[in-house]
Image (tube, rainbow, N blue to C red):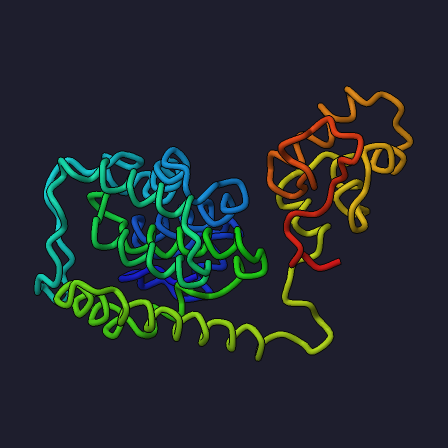
Length: 292
């Protein structure tokens, strides 16, 4: 995790996350705590949900700005070394522009990897908040990617961009001037590739890049029964087969306590979603890239 303009070292960040006292600027320490708390919530948010996006900004900027979790009400711009590189749209247009962008994200058929980069650019172009737009854009791109492939939640995107910050701002500025996000998308794809290569090089050959079901379930704080079913779903299984995993007999309670929460969280899906009571209905893992 890297935060722009934050001078804390990796060792200091680790100490902050462990609850130890650290000699540093209070604002920078708060930034670290907020960022960690926000990234912990990534599995619970939906990329196209405006309320989730506002909640994420509220968490990321808590104690740092007065309007955390609210759209900006004044004009803002992107500055690099005191030079204006982008003037954002008027505050009066922010809510409409973000509504359109999130609607596009929900309905888009663009390949998710590319869509995440397009969203990143459009988000930074709109600059919907008074502060924290850069880290929010990168957080939300991570969320989009992890919704597509859960293993991508662990990519060090922040660090890679931090190491190429001048090129990052140059790509944003060039896209603005050309009214075309292609160059920025290409830059971000290269940054993501670098992040993936960094992870691969740091991962032992016998270790899966994807988190295990147990890791995912524990992080999401599933109940013991929910976790057991999540860990033991094999291919497509009927309701009775799932109930048998827990030796359950009551269908209604099983649905309420186990199956429905797993579906709502996005871990399990029905094979015939438009006919929930079909006799041919079965259930399977929704996130197939989770390690088994």
